[in-house]
View 1: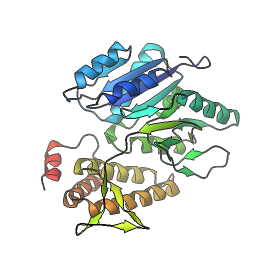
View 2: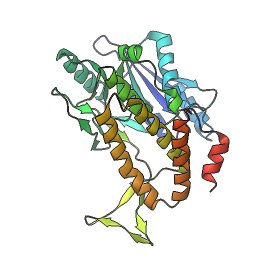
View 3: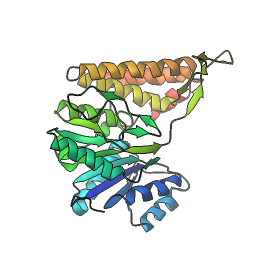
Length: 309
């Protein structure tokens, strides 16, 4: 579906997906001219049949030869789109995201209105995820500038990709979207939350905060937090530290706000997670590797070490 004579392509990065990916992909396919699903070397038992079903729907499926992370998967998908008929805009999604039916038209409206107002738009993002509005930053215009949006729902002009380059594949997972947002703003682009751009997104695993077996309450409600396993904590700490070091001088207020928000979440995890010792070990390894300049996938030796304590 070419919108206003502009070609729209989409990429979904997938790794060991469940069957929800099929419905999500169908919802996205209805709004774009071409959809590429990149299989990041899945090993799940149902993956082969799911990807076969996607191909039967007319969706291009690209298989990565090795597990390379979300940044590399998105880059591979964009390359696949460009090898066919280069789109004017690229839409990126996680495998567990379902956009509203008018997502593309809403994003395009926001983009056109902002460009018409003289704003240099880097890309448009989701306005809300599962009913939760994305945080914003103060702007000098009437549009909502997204603070640190998730990449699921990025609506990116190819002109932006040509200017900024590809996603940061070296981060593997975590902070890939944050780094692209920071890079765009450092280059003078605005990152706008698209009016009406909503995404149903599967939330991460939440655990109740407990001390000595009792629920911790705050303001009359039981406290809970987003839990991440040690391997994920390694990437969060490594990439978050690298991101802060890279952009502190260019965007000090953005980096400081991001560090504060991250510190709040980490405090809960390190206080209440049942495997907080392993989380601390993984976080320390990530911090060390950031200052050591390490990128890419965690080594098998380190992965074994931080998960076996």
